[in-house]
Amino acid sequence: MSIALAGIIAGVVICLAGIFTDTHTKKHKIKLKAIEKEVELEKLRLETYTMETEKLRLELEQSKVLLLEEKQNSSK
View 1 (tube, one colour):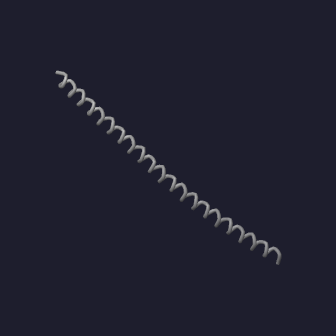
View 2: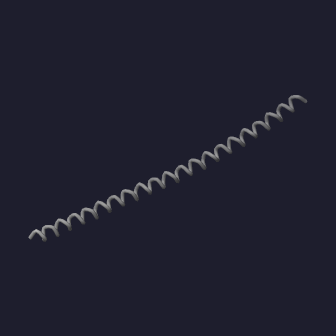
View 3: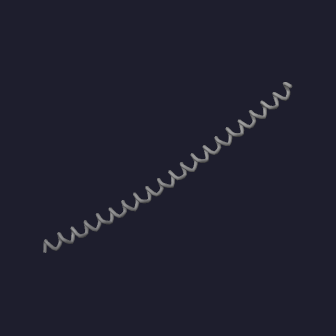
């Protein structure tokens, strides 16, 4: 009788361990996907920042050129 009870307890423990492991694995996979999405979002933010910076640099350069042209025209 005690061998049967020990077998049942062992079976229950194995099932619980499997459930715990599966849940733990799924939880880590979800976290990994979230981190991957955050990395992707950060790359997009950096790309957008770089494009905006380049756009502003070009606008500033254009403003400098226009200002210099205006200064030259006014000095003539």
